[in-house]
Amino acid sequence: RVCPKTVFLQNGKNSLPEITHEELCISCGHCVAVCPSGAIYHRDFPEGTITAIDREMLPSQDQFFEMIRTRRSIRAFKDDPVEKELIEKIIDAARFAPSAHNSQSTDFTVVRNKDMLDKIVEMTASYLSKNAKQFRNPVLRSLLLMVAKDEIEGALHSLPSFDRVVNEYQNGKDTILFGAQTLVFFHAARNINMSDINANLALENAS
Image 1 (cartoon, rainbow, N blue to C red):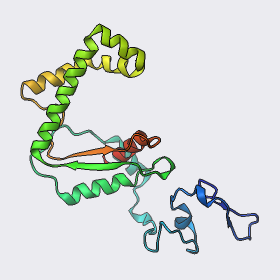
Image 2 (cartoon, rainbow, N blue to C red):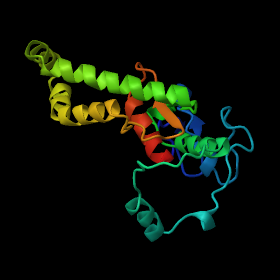
Image 3 (spheres, rainbow, N blue to C red):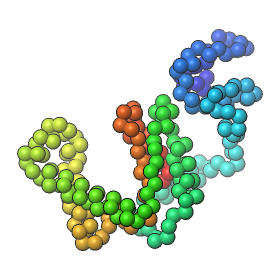
Image 4 (tube, helix red, strand yellow):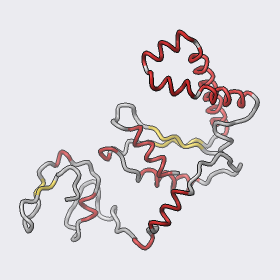
């Protein structure tokens, strides 16, 4: 009943289930997790990799809603370095996010080097400046609108923001990373279906 791909088939209530479509298995682990007698073995989930839920540690409905309601995006950071253990814990939370077909397509790249972080800010400001110039060119703007109308119209709406970020960077103010000491990229291969959505789900888990 819990298998999302109907790998198992049970003809009667007391009959043994049969594996009918093994090739459809997405290694979600539901079958191993819910089997009351621990009778199912899956090669991707050897003994000890799935543990029982400690329901006493789960937040109440009100506590969970309060956590969601009070979430804020941070744009003011301390100069203190972020501990490696904390970064690993954040990524561990991110990797438990759901993904289409359980592809687990999201990869994580951590940047902690100050020179590299400064370079990323510089490259981002340069990219925004270049795009702003292109969007203001009537010929290029018309061509881009023909190719990707929705995306370009959204970018045109953001032109004042592009200008503000570039101007602030040129005046020595970082409104891109806001001086953060650590940056984590959530990324995936372009050819994986719904990888962008998967990455956003992982990002929400991490935040």
